Length: 381
Image 1: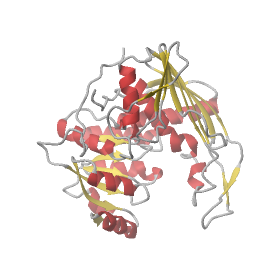
Image 2 (image 1 turned 90 degrees about the vertical axis):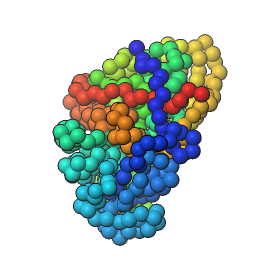
Image 3 (image 1 turned 90 degrees about the horizontal axis):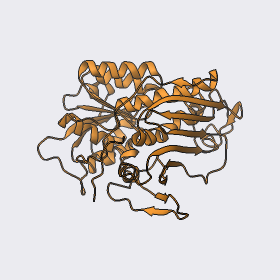
């Protein structure tokens, strides 16, 4: 049985419920790379329950540049982690550093929000969640795109039974890889990279936020070529080895009944597919790109040949990256469960490793981890 729609407060400046009785939660960002700009912009201007204390990076010049551009203070990593005004560390480091940085924050008594993936290994993820439980802090993790208006509209449609009982889903993230445009694409073709770890978290999190946890996984994994040639930047023409699968077909068996297939690839050129679809006993839903916060959302009712365009009824549809940090702050102040939880982010890591292991071993793999289906964010109109 699907859970009933239960609206909870949102902390957006323009139209959502506002924080009225609690001080904003102080956050510190570690990692001053490209993604930090949208986090800084949104956490400063969009969410009333957040206050950006500062930003840090191992390269202090980058931290100072971002701090100056956004009107905040630059700190060393060590100083920011122990800063008295910081309650949440927003971890925007490279994936290989996610586990170590997050664990250091937790050991310092800070809650932490990791960019995706939560960690690159199961062991790191398990230790992080265990230590957070012992120290009484919270762990959240990207992606938070499922909290945007598009996927929250889908959640409302499912909760209201618009397509009956979900029976299946399919997703595709197809591309020819990153070496043609990315100046330093080496990581994408090493263990911990590949299309599943790079983009899979968006698709898996979207499906899991709608259908709940996965109980079994099977995978088929291949790599079409053994090397790639960098096509831009200072390393243009350099040949790099491919040491991880670059075309992965993952079958997912959800605990609540539906099955799903997810194909992630750096090996193909086709780009006109529907990225995510859920099939039900009473109709079909075409979902928006799970790497975005808006639409479109389309509905095909049973017996009809015509797709309906569904209005995005509430929530932000522009890039509101950082809404997961805001929801973590809400959870800290209210004591209510957070939505982009560390448990859900770890479940994604567990599934991705299981898919690669299944491809190597040729067998289905049971998933031991689980999480609670997050409460919806949207309010009924």
